[in-house]
Length: 129
Image (cartoon, rainbow, N blue to C red; front, side, top):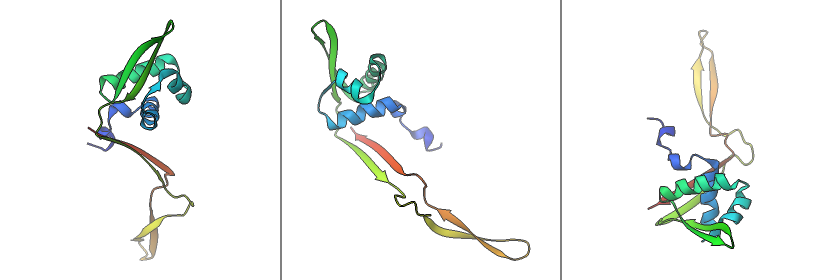
C-alpha cells in the first residue's frame, strides 16, 4: 500500500481543505462570508460542507435570515486541530545531501548527487479526536 492510498478521502478536495482552514481561525462563520473568502458557489459550499458534517468534522447550524436560507459552521468535536505550514528550499539551493558514486566500464568514477525535496511549500492539517 502506497502513501497515497493512506490519505483521508474527506480532505482530497481544495474546497474541503479551504473550509477547514477558514474554520480553524474562526469560531463560527456564516456561509455567505465563507463563500466570499473561498470564492466558490452556494452549491459547491453546500455539498462540501454537508460531506464534512456527515463525517463529523464540522458542525452546521441552519437558520433563516429574513426569507433567505442561512447558516453558520464551526469545527466539530476535535481534541486538537493543527495547521502546519513549512517552507522548503527558500533560497533555491541545490540541496545536495550526498553523492552516489558509480563506475563505468573503463573504471572511471562519476558522482551522482542525491537532492532533498524541490518542493517550495508544504501544508498539513492534523486533527485529533
